[in-house]
Length: 279
Image 1: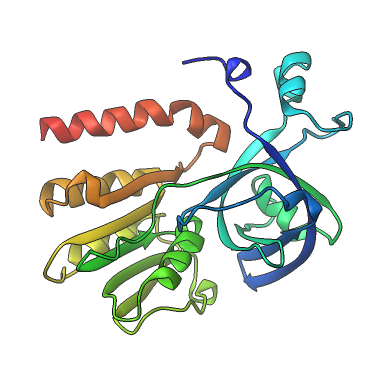
Image 2: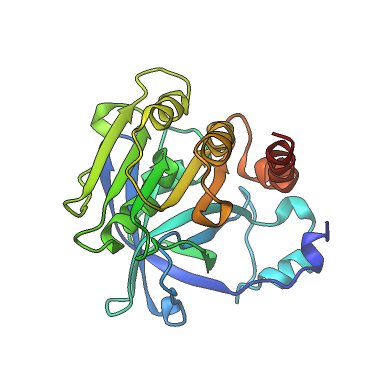
């Protein structure tokens, strides 16, 4: 694997916090804006994501901010940490970018930041990336995930045509974390509060028990990596969904930081693929 400092550095966008809102007990919505978003654009995916940059405590970077120079001139422990978040919405007319953050007290890096973010604060990020949007030719859609996938699931539901058929399963911490999301009449949305159960357990159970509608499915399945691994095995080997009809990956891994998960994710995915071939 190439060293990060030798890779082409993606473009950095700079924005300002416009406003924040606590939309659920464990979720904060942050709206970003400003002239620095003049070159930001999405390309039709519903799972667009950005990588927000967080400077280590006590580290200040010279202006203008130059990520490539930082990586070339500063030791690795002074590079900004990256946290990946789905774009909940992008309004090019208002030049406002909406991002939802899962917050569990002081746990993690991005969640606590979102909880205390104030209007006018500077935010730098890379992106957007992305690769999924609901196929309008599919007979029905399967949307599955935990809180980390909820913004992308909500965006996908908003992109579906009114007559679309969808089965939606979302695992959240508790019933209070359920959100009102727009969905076509043919979409069945089921919330799965954990209430202390292990992460992903209720989600895997619900997918296994789900009666699949007839016809071809286009599926979006994302969340905690251990649960996603079980779901991928079920959907690929037991349900027979072709890989090209399935957008699936572990957004995060229980017990690992974002950096630690990114470091092993490629090999993790390769191991999952080897398991499928031998099944």
